[in-house]
Length: 539
Image 1 (cartoon, rainbow, N blue to C red):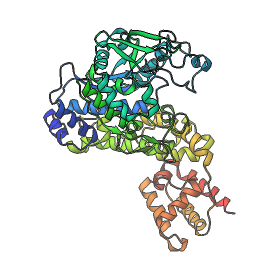
Image 2: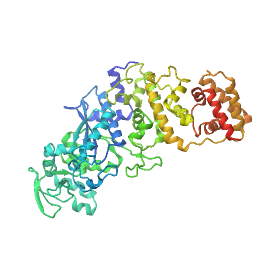
Image 3: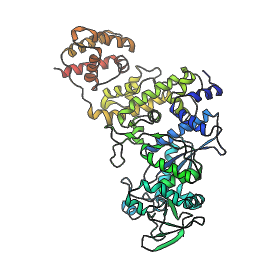
Image 4: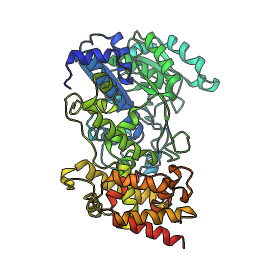
C-alpha cells in the first residue's frame, strides 16, 4: 500500500502516537518552520562517558524531529547536541584512570583539565569525542556544539550581557528556590578564578553590564574586578540552560522528570531574557529490576554495551519508544521480548493502513535517521524466521555445546535455506543468544525432576514422538502435545500446568516457547533425549 505525502500529512495531523502528539504541539507554535530550521536540542554533561540515558534522549528527540518534518511536509530542522564542557569538575568519576591527577583539578572547567586517558587535549575533549563516536555509531544526524567554544569565542557574550542586565530579575526568580546557606553564595554568573582557574560559587557585583564587568572575592580572599566575557565566567546551571535556549533559538528540548523544577525556573528566566521556553516532553526515568531508580554510582542499571551484547540495536530503540512518560525497568530480562516485539511490529507494516502504520513504533524507528526503508514502501516488511525467545530455548538446551555452527545446524530443521548469509539478522542474534544464555540464564538454570502424573505424561509424549515422521511440522507437533495434556489420567488441572511441567523439566524455566515449534526446531530425536534425561532424574 503506497502512501502519498498528502495522505501522510493528513494522518499525522490526527495521529495519537506520542512523537506526533509532540510534533503537533510544536507545529501549532511553528506551523511553517522558521528561517534556518526549527532547532531541537539535547544536552550532555561530559563529566562522564555517554550512557543509555544519552542514547534515549537523542533517539526520542530525533523521533519528534522526524514526526514534525512529516507533519509539516518537510519543514527544515536541525538537532544540536550540546556539551556543557565549561562546567566545573565536582567529583572524580570512579571509572577513569589517573584519579589523583583529576583530584588536583577539582572545580576547574572540564575543558581545562588534562585528559586522564592521555589521548586528547582535555578531559572534556576526550568525553566529547566519545559522545560523538557514540552518536555516530547509531547514525544520528546532529550538530555538535561545545559550551567552552561558545563562551571562549564570544558567541555567548551578548547573552551574558543580557544575563547581567537582568541580574536582579533573575535573582528574584532563583533566591526563593534556594536554601538559606545557598542563597548567601548564589549568583547567576560564576566567575572563573584568575588565580586557581576554578569555577567559583561566590556572590558577584555587576559593575557594568554592557561591558560585561563584574566584581567578586577570589579564592585567596582578594577582590577582583574582571570581564565575565570570553570564557572568564559561565552561568549557573538553570540560568545557563535558559540563556542557551535564547542564544541558540532552541524550539524543542525534552528532559527527565528529575529536572522538572529546573525546567520551570529556566523557563521563567528565558522570559526575563526576552525569549521563550522551548516545547518539550518530560520523560520518566529508568528503574532497575527491583523498581529502584538507576544510579551510575550503584551500578544497578544496564549499559548500552550490555544491551547490545544480548540484544539488537533496533530492539533497544523499540523498548525506549513506548510510553516515555512511564517509568521503565531496565535490566537484561526485558531484552528477549523487546527483540521479538520489534520484529513482530516490523513485519506488520506492509499490511497496515496509514493510521496504524503511524502508530507502529518501528515505522518511527525506520525513519529516525532519515532512512525510510520499510516505512512507506509496500511489500518491504521483514520478519525473523525464528523468534529470539525460541532461539534462546534452543541455545539453552544445547548448553556448553552451543556454538554458532551448532545452532545453525539445528536451525536447518526449521528455516528454509539455513545459511547465515541469507539471514544476517538471525545470524547476529545467534551470537547474542549464546551470550545471553551463558551470562544470564545458565547460572540459574535448573531442570527439575518430573513428579506424579508428569512422569506418565512425558512417557506418553515420548511414545507419540517415536511414532511420528521426523519431518512433522510445528503445528501438528503442537496438536500432539495438546492432546496428551488433555488426557485426564495424567491429572493436569489445565493445559497451562502441563506446559509448565514441560518447561521446568525439559528446559529448566517457568516459561517457554510453543512446544511444537521448539520440537520442530530442536528435532524429534534430540527432544526424546531431553525427555529421557528428565525421566532419569525421577528415578
